[in-house]
Image (cartoon, rainbow, N blue to C red):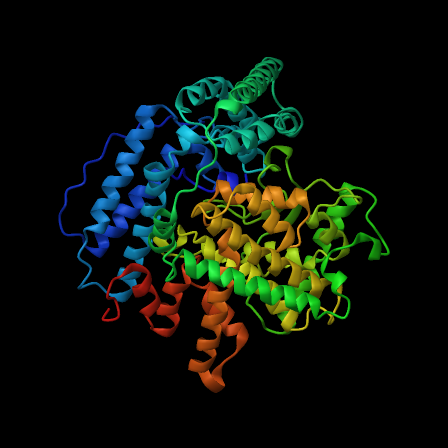
Length: 579
């Protein structure tokens, strides 16, 4: 089942909550008002049921708790989600307004996304990363922002650390059929967790009393020993573990249609990836110097001497992008935007996030700031993201910051509509950020054939390669090794980045298709929007209109912006145009 929040992807006075009872929802006609009431209750239930995810999203009422991984709790939570899904599926929306039908479609897809993992993938039984990720995010979510006094957060961390050995023991009982690939990734993360617990955590321990510090130290050491022991336990079993297996084409197509609301099946998506990969490889070849697409710090006059200087230089380039956007009226920057910072990627997250990851403001965050976590600085590194950031950080910065994820998700978090505010549709989120990379090139941000412009081509090339790996892995057409090789040959990635990308694809089905698929959908919508507006068209207005509705599927946005329901009808098989 999908646990609350996006802890592993994005990272990453305490009242106790009673375990929610199994809910039996009567099958009676559903009204729009009741739909919104159900959705509100569901979001409140998530906050209580998944406290680590809630902390990550800025809700801190249960910062001293871990999720309950007992079989009874897993079954109870799955039954609750399934009952809600059945209730929403059964609704007769024939007399509803267009806006209410859109909210119904969105909430239904949210429940589908929560139901699918437990119904099909059984992550608590197959994926040890669930438990190592819970431990990492339990602490990381308390450290990343100063939302409360250090002592308050340190005491919460102590309580969570004390609960970790029991969680690990429960994990060993739950993992009836662990997958070898997932176990190896979990082992790598578990053995990299020490700096997070022993160094980062201790930055908030200064105000503890002597007894409180002793309690924290003891809980920390016991938690580390338990997690290291979990890695040892997994390693001993590796030879007997199940090899990674694809979910199959039918299940993959179910995700595309019912969770992502895509008017495409797996073969459509795979074909799009092939076309876009061919296009961007060719565009690289057309550069005056094709090697410019491969970032090379040797071309830079001033290489940052250390990690601190590197992060500061990276972050400083954001203002150039903001000034460029404002000068050309390419997007409106709302006044509530917080600070966007670049930080070092914690070691525990490196196995599946070799390029780092974005941590935007949470849905419940009082602080509007956000971070992008980038790997440890090494001027000799062969990691693509480090090399790119040294030569010209602006393409990745634009993707992660402004106008990319940070801007888009900040706007989404401020929507009044609760269902739409909670809808984090990844194809749109990643599609917008990738679209922004090329949009800035075409609007003149980079000189022709410059390192920045060439880097955008390489970034699109390897995002196109991601589609082939994601689709072909999960539909069973390729092995994991074929995926790694495709990233290296087709995407132009180094082996380290390719292995991490393939691992991420295997761990998070459909995540890797999001970039190119979403970008293509947005560009297709842009062309149609321009035709509809005619002489009144302005690119910046399109961007503002697109972002104003949150992180919604482009099939839904097409219905909103162009009053064309054909794409969402194709995705769902429903007739909706009359609304």
